[in-house]
Length: 312
Image (cartoon, rainbow, N blue to C red; front, side, top):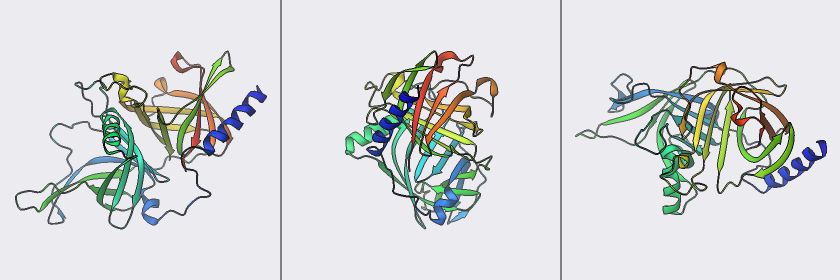
């Protein structure tokens, strides 16, 4: 077993060194990026007239119960919402993944992948425009506890009114070794606790990325190049948001709250232990780890090992 793990570790180092983005060392974050770093929950919309906020928060006439969460970490951006659409092949919400840059006056999101309708849209635009990502520019206001994001003016007849999404920062619950942005690079199948098969995960077919930060996690899985038929439910991929615990001794618990794309579990209260995902975690080094789903009453994923490499 030890020799098998050593072989896997060697293969993984080779794979990761040839894959996406590894920098020679940590880069110093700008002040704006440091403030953005973390999880944010959308609370509503601001109406702005002549650069003055004039209306209380609201979401809109048909978005009661809307949940929308964003995460910024190490140059990566994740988002997910719970807005269902029974008329689409994938009935859950939407989600996205990409990179971001922030300057004094502009927040730019370079979105490349997603789940649900966002995943389908990103696949279409990447192919039709022959680009790796789609650029979205937002004016913004930012402080330590909230930020507003202007997605372009929505003018009235005098062109004086605009609207901004309003986000509040989720409080940090805890720090852990597993905090960061990760990408799935391998899967290992186990039978009776013995590894029997190793499969690489080609990024050009599947992009499975997740972020752990301050006690929260968000995952996005884009399979639009693996499932070619947009009418199939599987084309929507999947996403999940919730809280997590990692005790530093190899025990990871993920408490999912709501999903996107084709992942269909009902919305749950925070920290629902009855429906949590339990995994054993082993670190090969600071930038590579494997999680193996524990054998609980939810047997569907038991015996599945997933290897993640840190995205820098």
